[in-house]
Image (cartoon, rainbow, N blue to C red; front, side, top):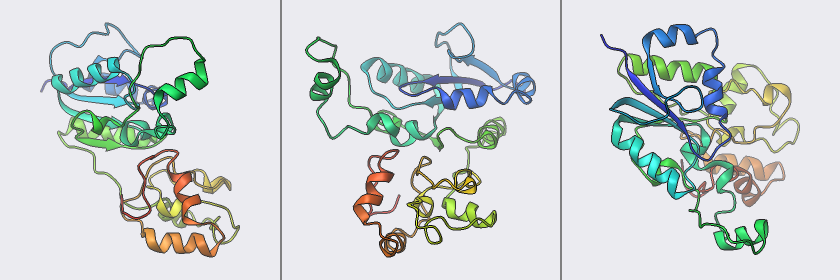
Length: 250
């Protein structure tokens, strides 16, 4: 059986999602035996899109015309396109100032120096069809390996639905919100990270995006009881998912 051909690319992002894959050092030799990484500019050359790919894994949000062109080209050449990481899935921190006109942002940063126009940063799904999402900032190592395993079997990854609080309770952590009065976004954030931050006493920042199974109304009532209003919670969640709305589920 022929090895699946993969394309891995990064748009506006920090490259952390791709680096997390490259950091799977113990597993990489076996992966290279079973998968053809045909387009992976961060790791190898040539960096030309050629032929067809079984899947394209794309990190980062789309914020320039060049990135939109690359994204559409990858979509046209790939059977599957997978949003890799929170920025690709939801927009991430690059979209924080989308409520301010780009012209004004350029003036604030660069003054009067002329610059080419750029697009409003958007998640991949605003440009092309996305077949699956692996969220995280960056995704966990086990999630990336599971993704590649699914692709080898011809499957799409199964997206989790439970919030970070589920992971926290499985690790028998104290609740940072209720027991320490900290603004922890675990009740509304997608789990799968083994509650990495709360386990170290650091409140969840919502970097994995919204949890589909979260009881939003009940969670907001819980925040209110602990001294945090809905707009404060919404503002924190929108750092990674700007379209998050406390009036609707993910």
